[in-house]
Length: 131
Image 1 (tube, rainbow, N blue to C red):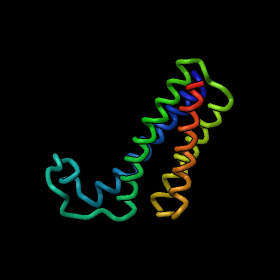
Image 2: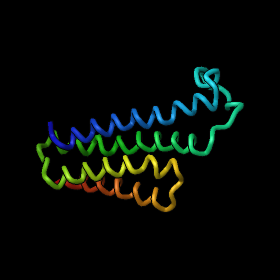
Image 3: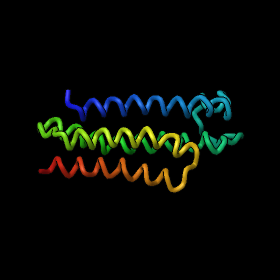
């Protein structure tokens, strides 16, 4: 397995951790009656700011995984894995790990800078796949 695919798997596992970090407090705060329902209506209770941020973190990580998954897969299938693309993969993962507490704790502008580092790493991988 290429380092890029290893990082993709680790990033997917990180997403499961992010889901749990969000789901546990969301279930406590909204109640299982709501979270186990079809959610046709808005909840009668509000989530705390931190829990809501964790939900947005989870959504953002799904979005980031789409582009990174494309980059890692194309790099691997086209046999273009290099030290450069491996380094970019690890930078992406480090940024995603740092992004969770940065968003949950409302770090400004740190959260945006961390997001930009991960996005840049993915973009550079996509560009590397073209050459």
